[in-house]
Amino acid sequence: MRLRFLVCVPLFLLVTCRQSPSKVIGVVPKGAGHVFWLTVKAGAEKAAAESGYTIEWNAPTLEVDASRQRDILDSMITRRLAGIALAPVDRKALAGTVDRGTAAGIPMAVFDSDVDTTNRLTYVATDNRAGGRLAAQRLAAVLGGKGKVAMIGFMPGSASTMDREAGFREEIAAHHPGMQIVVESFGMADRAKAMAVTENALTAHADLAGIFADNESSSAGALQAIKSRQAKTVKFVAFDANEQFIEDLRAGWIDALILQDPFEMGYQSVKAIATRLSGGAPAPRRDLPATLVTLANLDAKEIPADDPARRPEAAHAGRTLGG
Image: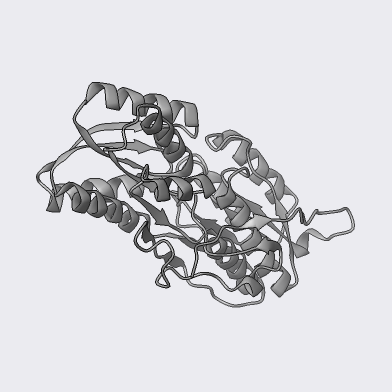
């Protein structure tokens, strides 16, 4: 069963003046440009349609802009939307806003990345710590448990990627004493920045054996640096993917990718809000598994693909990578 990517058709459920806010659920991702977030949107729209709601989709232009994300949420809270699903840019900066929404009686679901408050309806995300451990295990396997490695992160304060970084460190410290993390840098949601810090790592450590990048933009920048240096011997594990990453996995530039399920994140977050609005009690937390994808299993049946019928909003649908 081949791994497929979501290609969204331009279906935007726009809120008009005729729609009551009581029938609208706000969905606020970290950004809107990546396939990952568009796949979240498809899942959110499907859950909303099943429950008799529509979604209002809004996101910062930059995935590091916590201030803009807070403004978007404040507007939704003021207009008293039926519920809000949020992927917080920063776990601390958005905590007070989640508290305000909950205090106003609005169910606040958090997805992808956590926030520093318990005043949320539910948390739906990949088990990011396990995903980081999975990346470390893969590098250890292909490096024979020895060598210097670099970690290219997203940004300080992002709970999901911080958990991935923590899992990566923990796995190496506990089980792979022959490996050494010699560089920890951040791409700050900027591919050019991620490329630059990766090039610095390759320059500073000519014997660098492996690299782990923990999100799509950091992975894209690190990949550019590896390719520009023709450093194909450096084993690269990327957390997130796009069509280009799949091509580079086949070509040997990438050793492995970590698979997430953003459709399910969007679906389960909005479904939890609809459940609460109908008087139910959704689970307070839902951990989604991460899956290691290598050339050996890229086309194998053990990588499940979504039924296209689950995604009527998409021209093509399938289990996707990203986030």
